Amino acid sequence: MRRVFLGLGSNLGDRAGYLRAAVRALRRGPRLEVVAVSPVYETDPVEVEGEQPAYLNCAVELRCGLGPLELLRYCQGVEAALGREGKGEKAPRTLDIDVLLFGEERLEHPELAVPHPGVVRAFNLRCLADLDPGLYIPGRGAVSRLLEGADLKGVRASGEVLEPC
Ligand SMILES: Nc1ncnc2c1ncn2[C@@H]1O[C@H](COP(=O)(O)OP(=O)(O)OP(=O)(O)O)[C@@H](O)[C@H]1O
Ligand SMILES: Nc1nc2c(c(=O)[nH]1)N=C(CO)CN2
Image (cartoon, rainbow, N blue to C red; front, side):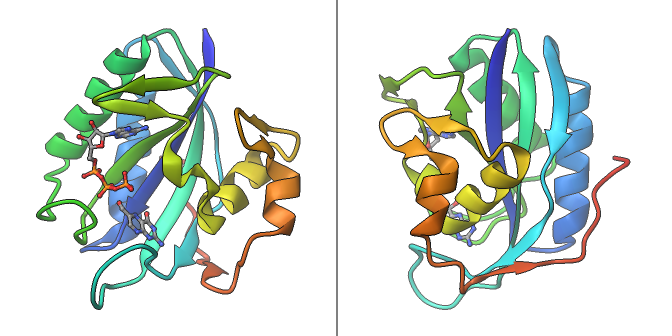
């Protein structure tokens, strides 16, 4: 079983509802156990073109018996089942699930880069540090140290509570 961290994001429609539904679907996943869900932050969009609504973001810790590509496919199935809308990369979307960390593995597959290049975005560091301040990000370092250098201006407590999902 690998210790896996997913990043969940939504910036269209019932944002908290999509995050809640995604966590519920992960709980039902084969060979997946949801260990913890981080607080939910409202975050200014980063690395996007033009105006976009704010995101809700959180991270989910899993114990995972799937292989990395199997997990990616399961997450893509959840996105599709929840009617992922949003056209093209970086477009606003009802639900986005990123595989941030897969144990301490480093993968460069055409469909799956792990750690996800966006793992060092401030909102991801915030969520990951909430789950485990001692977490090590392969190739990057300790999450708590990375968070010290992060710009958290665009990352606000949302007040949304996802549990129980
Ligand atoms: N670690 C990963 N987690 C999820 N998808 C990944 C990962 N690495 C590569 N991908 C690939 O990224 C492709 C595009 O995903 P998507 O449209 O969600 O990108 P994005 O969310 O707009 O941008 P970003 O990945 O920077 O958040 C997917 O088809 C998937 O194969
Ligand atoms: N704040 C924030 N910005 C983003 C996010 C996200 O989840 N949160 N996801 C993106 C690509 O999917 C692009 N930009």
